[in-house]
Amino acid sequence: MAFADLYPFETFASIADAAWWRSNDFRSAQDPVNQEAMKTAQNLDQRDRKRVEEHKAIFTAALGQQLEALQAQGRLTAATGLKGRSLTQVSAWNALVAGEEADYSRRWLLDSLSDMWTKAFVRMDSERFSRRKAPDFVPGAHIIPSEEQKRAAWSIICDWADNGTSDNEMMGWGIRMSDANTGDNCELQFVNWAAKLMVSGPDYKMVPAVDAPELELVTAEFDVPTGKLMLTDALRVEGFVDATEFDGDREYKELSLNSAAGRTARTQAHASDHQVAYTQTTNTYVAVYQNTDKTALMVTENYLDEEWPMDENDQPIIDGWYYVGNFSCDVWRVLAFDRATALSLMAKGGCVEPEAELDRYLSMADAKVASGDNQAHHEKSYAGNIVQIDVTPGRWSIHAGAEFASRVDRSAHNIPQGVEPWCILKQVA
Image (cartoon, rainbow, N blue to C red; front, side, top):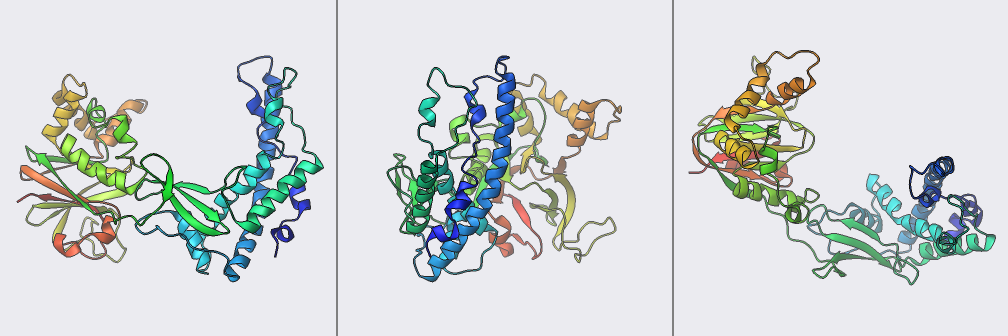
């Protein structure tokens, strides 16, 4: 079946008058001469964006039918180079090719493929860009495309959906994405609906992707000189945050929070550069447990299964471990560091009297705060979000990494089934 039968011209023509770029014609929202016209343009853009989003649901439904029909004919080909990578749309494409039942990721795939519709639509009136440079151009003006322009754009869309070739002279519509595991910039391209996964190489040119090696869990060592260990999501005191930041080049490349590889690399970097144990979490609440011989700490999800046995204080009873405390991961991470390390970092970050400041801050956890003192309430809340415990001074290690709870060797760390750990801290023998 031709795509035109699923997505007739009349359907496309019903939205072809839309525009969502009128307000871009106005250089400044502060220009009093253009204020009223720009407001009108913004309102029209907002109206048409809503119309376009509603129409895209119609388009993606038709495209979904088209792809299912092509799959039944054996026209679709899966992408390779996906092993060791986390690319939702590529996995969804391969699942479609394999004839698997659709799930939420199919919708993401179709939404991404709808870029073919958008690219053809915005290029429908090719003279629009040159008109903006004309001296008599009226900002916010929109000329509805002619019948000829509408049919030409619709034909391009139907041709792309029928032939499934994303690279063309006019413009490409391949799906660009970032690999959530490796951080690679990738693109899913198509030739006759045969998918090809590409990745950005060292010279930023796209090359065929190959399977990526499995990301290993990480073990990193850090110093605990006094044995006065603190665990929290962030120490919100003067100097500490500044001293634990990385330079911009590392921050957004090798240590990027947008990939599992970057987050794992941060664990090693924080340990070696700052003597801080670190692992990234989700927006969660964690509990800290110490093993019976006091040589290890486990940071795990705070809430266990309802059937888990509880002690008289309503804390889970975990064989070989006892409960120490809990804290909220408001910034989606776990940090562990010695008190002396905190003071050193605070001084490095510019705090003049780090010990006095740290003691003042920690004392806020038990302070009485006036109802209108928002800053004091803030400090009281976060000063109470720190677990402090005395451990044996010396060298310690953190064991963490991507999907740690499902990949960790539980027997090696004495982690019972049913417990969901984020990391393990161990005294180095």
